[in-house]
Image (cartoon, rainbow, N blue to C red; front, side):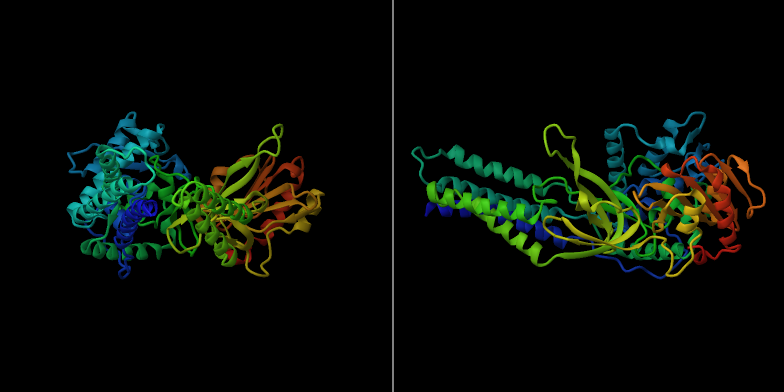
Length: 570
């Protein structure tokens, strides 16, 4: 009897504390903010603060990017882009007249001035080379922005002093329960002394109270919600200008502070992508699912024996837990097998739920990366086994990657929209169906090149893959019909992106009489008409057939619209 009471006290005390902690985290989540009316009017809040309140009181690398662009709008630095590629932008430090800067603005400016040589530094040179230095710099920036937000009453700690006091008091009660569990534990020939009993309680109290005082993030305030609604209205206004998302950092000379705020609000994709202060990684990925560019935070499951495992494996572990728990309870003590029994029951229930109620997810593929490998024998090389598959399903700007078995990984491309059948607990993908591909042609739309035309020109049996989109560039590939090997890549870009593609890729010998211009060089050729640029590249099986590229360009040029009518091209 004392054994059951001892186990119940220990487990109950810990469960009650973590239950209270979870309930408090749930109750202090920032509530969604309803955007205000569309407006071009900017407020007094710096872009870094706007990034915090408009993105759910979570601060990402956009705060640093937006601050740098805002320094350009204030005349402290200047962005110069000598070519068409925003990555070639240089940052020029201008003479300062004792500008009154906030701590995080000064931190960003100091980063630029410390790297500048002759008051000039390439934009791409602002990245950090040391990971620890980058983390420390980013943490300092985050602390400074949050201090400013709290001083303006726009943000507050998720757990205030009262909440932490409640958790510490609950930790004391849980520690007392642990001491009582040690005191009541039966079958001891030498009962523990008071120092052991008290030590167990103190140890538990210190661990739980330390956990309670960990930073839990920020949450909203009434003033912060009001400011966030107004700035979300500014974001709506910026997104109504389709070309705004394509503006490079050098556009601050025209758009002034709007560009920095656009980055802070997720409305300026090109400028955000061009500015890199070493804070971005695969955990923050651009997505267009839903019709607008936005960044999604991605978590990648790495630990835990259940992720990606099949149902029979997990069911076997559940059965093993039940068997070991029952054996320990019978041979040793009823309380000895409680943990194994609890795991067995829980795992069996979750496996059953996975099998009975599968989940259907439709969204855009953000990232696919090999995660685990396996060997079939000691002499065989390691082969891919499981992949991380990050999908933006449009429900939130936060998502957790699913686990994709290697046999299902073939053909999945970043940017396409797919529908997957998954299991919630193991996060294993069991089936995949392609819903659509970003930039795919409308039903019945003619192609710039057909598979038969490519096959006839290159004397190879080929088939055409579906169209995909990477940023502003649409792409289609032709592959061999028998072995699916790459033959030809066709890329098309319109507007400013098309002009950039034409200028940055122009090389080789001009081809006269084709559209508004054309050229060919080795395995590549390009043509341009109106605001459209098309680039052809021979791949693997198509190489050494360069002589046929001009004839393909003639076919493409005859189908390119002279005006901007993109639906007709795809």
